[in-house]
Length: 212
Image 1: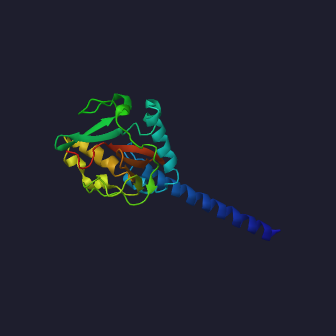
Image 2: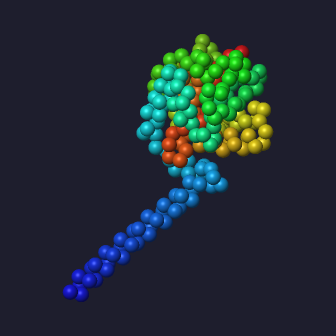
């Protein structure tokens, strides 16, 4: 009888150790998830999965095509808002909105859904983003492209826009969460982040390359 008791105790101890390890790993992950009420950049870097990205992008396309403000507002994280970049003379202008129906272009005073979204239904192809060439066309290739890069963060656009120190800190933080950049050469550039495990639209750049 004693050998059976020994085997039972062995498996009981092994199971307890596994549960303890899993609990410790979850606590470590949770500690990365929340920091002063915000997600951390380290946590964003732990989430490279892009399997659901095209589904999310299709939701974006549908919301714009149907001019569905309520659906569009579900596509960006409310605690951080959505940044929209456009030209304002020689310098870029950055607007932060929490409801897309409140956006008005600083130059044309158009609402968001009144902007031109030519060939919006094109789904992004995963390859190198087009280069700006300013020749016959603005780009060296035409279409809609996605790449797992973050050129916005590298550009440090906040240093050239009329932002105060608090605004600069906020835009720097969210720019570091960008996972995928989409360039549709027929309309605009879109930046997507993964926040708390889900895709979010974080920036839209309305500037047209090579435009005067």
